[in-house]
Length: 481
Image (cartoon, rainbow, N blue to C red):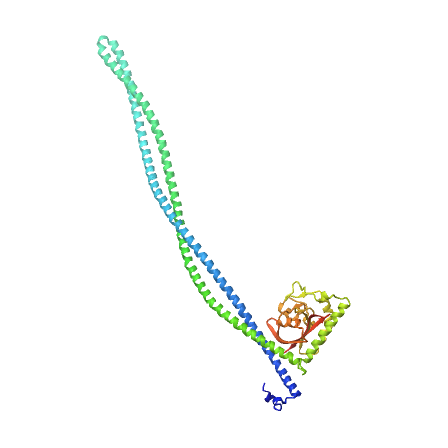
């Protein structure tokens, strides 16, 4: 501010009391414009929080990417082991199938040969049986002829005996023929017996041959079944082969995924490094703005505490008067035995179940509900700039708010934030500063969270509340800027 231009008649040390007052008043009027700094500080803090959150989020993404790499490496290792096992199975199955097929082919040839031999043997036995049958029939015919010759020889012997000496030669012949007939009958009988035994042997061989032929056909059929099952083995081998190919197909995408994830992590590391640098820059900017805000607030307090009537002088006086009145009401309640000093300073904030945002109760809330509205409501109505006025304890707990902000909570947290502000703990920098300030008064400029992402630029004027010589908290007046 150019003092020579603002006050042309007041040069060097010629500023009298009135000019000084006008000068301070001018500064006071311009100090109000510093509230924009608070708004900027709030925006910077929002950016800082967003940067912090994004940095944390990117860190989470980087961690997730590293976990994905480890998972992919595990998948790759498992796939390699599965591929090796599948190849072993494939090779073992191929070897076993080849051996089985070779043995089966040999068995099929042997069974076929055996079946053909059995069939030929059955045919030969059948022919032998027919031959024996014909021989037996011939032997029977010979035996019949031998009996007839024997009869003839007997008749010839009888006739030779009747002929006497003349028939002796014929008798010799007759006896020879008789002997031959006896021998022939004996030979044919033995032959028939031997043919019977041979026939029985051939019959048993025929039965055995037929059984062998049946077994050969069964073995041939079983070989066909084995061949079909061997075909199933071949199909299983093809499935194993496809499995190996599929595992090989997995390996390439997994390796590509690992490569991409490594690239993502490298990029994320660069982004994180940049964000870390931005965090430091934003944090420094936030710190410097906070310092500027504190300096401007101290200047406001200095002007308000001077002999010059500041713009907010009446509001400061109202806050001080209300703080004194509340302290006196609390002391009177203690003296009447309505509450103990320990209960008035209760810091056990019991959460109210289901409240959102969280609300709390203490042992002194019933007393503040009864005493504070009579002090707070009249002040709220004195100036349209006043958005609220309420007492808070040393930890920013606001037990009893203005009626307009003390509605029962509903289901919408954003609506609750704007309309249900009693029983809340406001432990932000402004709330704690108002509750813990022990100077005559404190003037702060801040952004008030109205819920739903909405903020209102406010000036907070507070004065300390003392009870029985102890600092209980502060009385806050929120003024719209």
